[in-house]
Length: 451
Ligand code: SAH
View 1 (cartoon, rainbow, N blue to C red):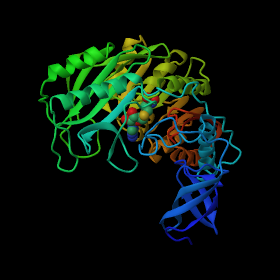
View 2: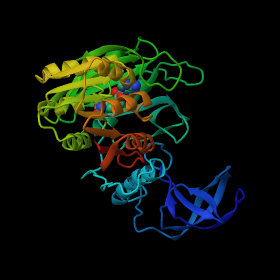
View 3: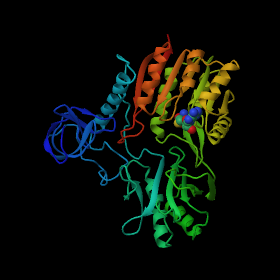
View 4: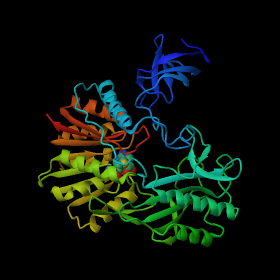
């Protein structure tokens, strides 16, 4: 056991999935924020929990050659990025290791081929969507990002992972709030008007949407805000007021009022045009998304005769990417708005062999199967909690030739692969793709086939 405030040398021998260094003190696990495997550090215990302790670095005895100076001035205080103290190369190796660990420990899969993580040539300014909370700081209104495990807002003029126009939009709204004494939301009292500034940027088209999230629809001096946004952002195509009256962490409410320009913006991905609305899901890193989808479609090895299922399809991106190489595409998605967008996107791109259904994949797919629909190739791209077991059972019964699994959470991926491999599928290859540079999150695409 270790005691609070105890100080000792520690050799870092591993990493947690959130990027903390791990060492053992007399067999007891000690987690150290900011330490890298291979380092030897003097640590001070700040908290002792049941199975492990948390410590802080006091001093370095041996530094990793893979350590770098974080490029962001608020890195230590902001909860956004968590692995800026590693070189980019190291972060890619770390992410591959996280996938490998999960597949072996949870999935029981030994000898799986996990490729090197595909990184970005320039892992900066990659996000096409920013969500800045707005609140009251010590000296006035602030907007930025939440501190780790807290709702303290850390203000920073520049966020290097966002498209630069997002920072401009945030600053413009904040200046307007200060200039006209507009009230900001208080999470505790639920009073105040402005809650968030959300931006969406079409990387290929250059179109920009700014969404101001407020508790009511009356914005004082609203024309001044629009004028300021227009003059600071030449590519501005849409300003939307989103109403969110409900307390809680959900950022966007259901009601949108377009204050300026169009209701939606457009982006081009892999030669296809997609409509982006305030509420629909769209991958946040368009450069890596194209790489991810290309990999997924390569894994599908389509000849043109296949029926493919695109499950958890969002606005239909993967299925529409694959449509020209398949006989028929069936997409399933739970958010109705997204299904409408998927249908529109198919029309917009002259794709006539794609159908989309609204509903839970675990309910719609068994129904389709009962009606006689069969897929030759299935894409699944579930949210963090992974696939529902009902869905996996139906896939096993339907027995497609290949399943291509796109995952943003290696632990639920490993759980689902464990099930599928016990039911007659084989995992061929796993490709991690760095969709979220400098955060510990890792995305991967997996090729499986029927035995
Ligand atoms: N494939 C899309 C979206 C992936 S995100 C893309 O690449 O853009 C996961 C999607 O799953 C979200 O759109 C979410 O709304 C949807 N979803 C969540 N639970 C679902 C369920 N049970 N059935 C179908 N879709 C679901």
